[in-house]
Amino acid sequence: MRAQPASTTPTRDEPDLGHHGDAEVGDGLIDLAVNVRRAPMPDWLAEPITAALGDLAAYPDNRAARAAVAARHGRPPEEVLLTAGAAEGFVLLARALTGVRRPVVVHPQFTEPEAALRAAGHDVERVLLDPAEDFRFDPARVPADADLVMIGNPTNPTSVLHPAADLAALARPGRVLVVDEAFADTTAMPGVPGEPESLAARRDLPGLVVVRSLTKTWGLAGLRIGYLLGDAALLARLAAAQPLWAVSTPALAAATACASPVAVAAERAIAAGLAADRDHLAARLSALPGVRVAGRPASAFVLVHLPGAVEVRQLLRERGWAVRRGDTFPGLGPDWLRVAVRDRDTTDTFTAILAEILEA
Image (cartoon, rainbow, N blue to C red; front, side, top):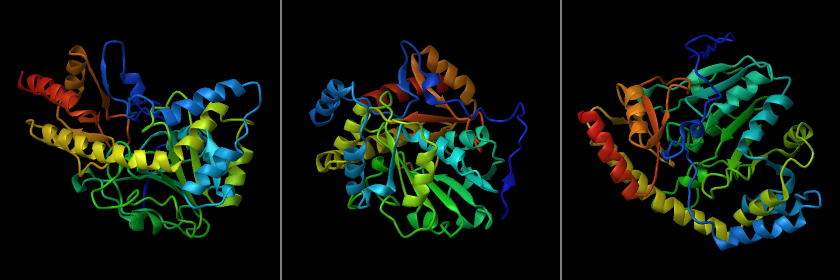
C-alpha cells in the first residue's frame, strides 16, 4: 500500500507538530503530561554530574562518554554520536541527509522527527497506523522506494512496542532507517532479559540509526543528553552538521555514569516497577465508562480514547491535573489523551477524580 503524501501547505486541521507535553503543565498542576520520571537522583549519577561543575572552564571532551556508551551497546566508539538530547539527533538527520528524495514518517509518533524534516525543507510522507488495529505496524505499508524511514519503538504516544523483526525488515541498502528508542529502557518484561525488541546492538542492518535518550528514566530533561547509534560513516556526516561542543561537560558525565553496569542494573529494576505501575494504570482506566486503553501499553505512558476528551482534559485541569492532549499527533484526534505512568497512589487519586468527571 502506498503511503499518502502529507500536505506541504499548513491547514487549519494540520496537527501542531511543535506542541509537547511540557506545554500542558502549569503551577499547581499534578503532571501526568510529561513522560520524565521524577525521583531522587542516585549518588552514582549525582556525584559525577556535580564533580563536572568544577571542570567548566575547559571545553567538553566527549571521548570517555563516547567509549562508555559504545561499550554498553557492544559497538566501537565511532558508531556513537552524543547529542544534546535525542531531539538534536532528529535535527542533525534532517539537515545532513540533504539528498533524501522520499522521506516517510510512521505515525502516530513523536512529532519532532517530522518537524525537523519539514524545517530542513523536506517533503514528508506519512504512514498512519490504524487505531482499530491497536496501531500495529506492517512493514509492507512503507513504500519500497522510501530512502528515509522514521519510526518509534516503543512509540510515543501509543506505547506500542513493535517486533524488532518487523523494523529490521525495513533496512536495505540506499535507505536510512531511523528507530527512535527514547523509551527502550522502559520496556522490561518478566522473564525477558535486556530491552525487548531493541535494535541498539544490531550492526548488520544497512542504514540503521538508533536514537536513544537518557533524559526520561533518569530525570535529565533539563541537562539534555542523548545519542545516536549507527554506521560510522553515516554518523560522521551527522557530526559534521553538529555545532562544536554541543554536549556539555555535566551531560557527558551523566552519559558515562548512565552507561555503567550499575546504571543498567538500576534501569532494569526501575522498568520492572514501572511495568507493574503501568498495568495498574491501564486496568484502572479500562474500568471507567467510555474509556478505551489503546493496545497493550509497553512504556512509561498510556494512550486512551475518550469521547469528549477536550472537555474532560479541561475539567481535569480545573481539578489540578495535567494530561497530554492527543490531537497534535498525526493519526489521532481530539478524543485521545496520553497519561504518564506514576505510582499507584497517584493513579488511584487521578482515576477517582476522572471517574467523578465522567459521571457528572
